[in-house]
Length: 283
Image (cartoon, rainbow, N blue to C red; front, side, top):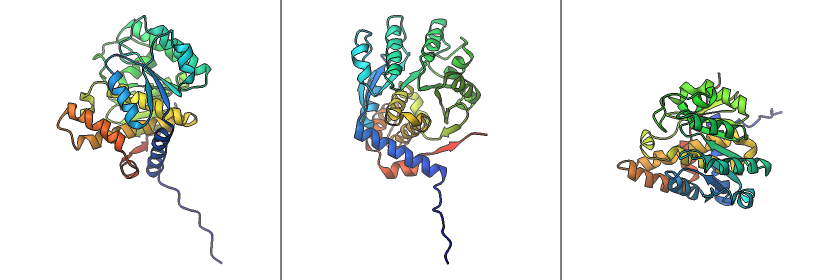
């Protein structure tokens, strides 16, 4: 009598890649509407990133439009890059309405520690329960410690791995998934920690790539809000894969920007399954 054998489980790397492909397919088929309240610098690349992935961007930031528009979106992305007192009420109103409507929203706390006004605004937004917080290491450390300190503008003074404990602490305090962009993108829910090992250094030479991946996270979370941890890591990896493929054709930052968008649009199953590289960093 032959013994029954259970099918072998897929290795973690294969499961992550398969899940990332399934989520990208869901975005392409569902075309989720993503409202972006973002800075002037990032609007173009952010909108084109969402479009090339298959989502539908809406750059609506007027507080007068929030009550009519936000409830009909599938996710909200709030980016404080060019923060001003005039825009903050719209950000708060949209975040509150998204929560009330059961829609996920994602916060990008750009240069959170650069000024008292900016840090207070970011902390007030964190209190409105974002589903995901995505920033560079310096931004996540500043939010976690609620401290103002020397920064390099929107650039990070720290490596992503330096912010793992700060990210876990922020995740536990806020209830959000926290993502830290860097050479290795870190994602944590306060307990689990994974790293997305995709991307190329030249992506840092293109303005608004960080902002754009935050919007992409919103699109991934929109199609799988129950599994925001997995959706966040998948979005970071997919964006990095597009950067790797674009770099093969690029001559510099300007052409990488173009090929990044084209590569994201053209990603197929073989690309994703062979290139997505997400590993557990939990101890």
